[in-house]
Image 1 (cartoon, rainbow, N blue to C red):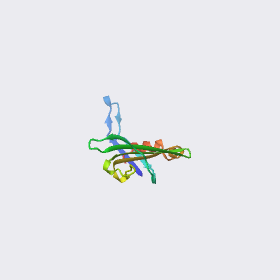
Image 2: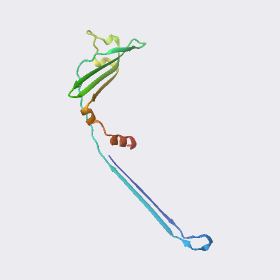
Image 3: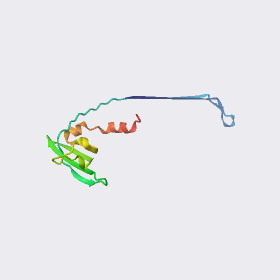
Image 4: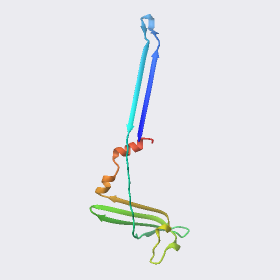
Length: 138
């Protein structure tokens, strides 16, 4: 990302007579310049594959009979805790043997996969970067 800005102004005033003819002022020349440059870059990448099963509970039965479901699984390894949260709407007709539903049959699905620990802290964006992304319009 690159940004630059350049401002310039100049003023020339003619010779001015002072009060009561005590002398002349001018000609007066004034000039102001300003240059600002900013250059930055960044990169981010992530790759995750979630395979497995998650038990959910029915949070609400909608007026049309569909079920609003919610579930969470926590996995702790190597001083890290991984959270998998799942929200969605299931049509009761899509529930198969074993009380299972394919994820492709869940409407309004929202899946959150987050971690807490040293790796999560190391990959979080710093406060200065968050500030520039908030302030800069591009």
